[in-house]
Length: 213
Picture 1: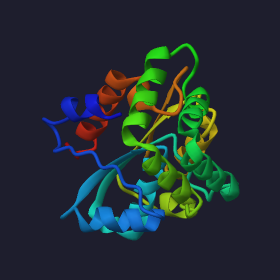
Picture 2 (picture 1 turned 90 degrees about the vertical axis):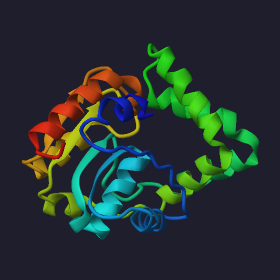
Picture 3 (picture 1 turned 180 degrees about the horizontal axis):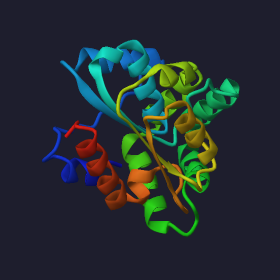
């Protein structure tokens, strides 16, 4: 998911990737804060973006900058659906759920990215996928968190995402006039997976020009 960025940004900032899947976003945020010292820059896609906003809400003084991609600042519109997905995964339908998720997340023409996502989901395992699905039903509303934030912000949005439409990213950008917003044509739910080199280029420019790198 972030392999290109880890290699392509390491001369500007130290990088690390975390996979968190506690029962709630609040618990995962506290886990991240407890395992990290000092200030940091957060990047998150989809689930990870929601987690990044939770961290920002809990400890804004430690977040120097935030990079969000295709994530939803509002509460989950249908928590029962999230719990139903978790039940399907735990009931032996992991492969089917992965296939359905990939179909909605990544445009059909991008076979390479779809295959990469499927491998990643298999390697991560059914239980992590299910726990993350459970946690989405605990999502807090962070529109006010973003509106109040004045830290350097990068918003990269795939405009072909069927889960979190580009209109959400545009709305965030209107509420955060200091934020840098980029829409990626034909890109789905995972910009760094689907457009790795472009995302690294955009992040380098943002880090440098914002004084973060």
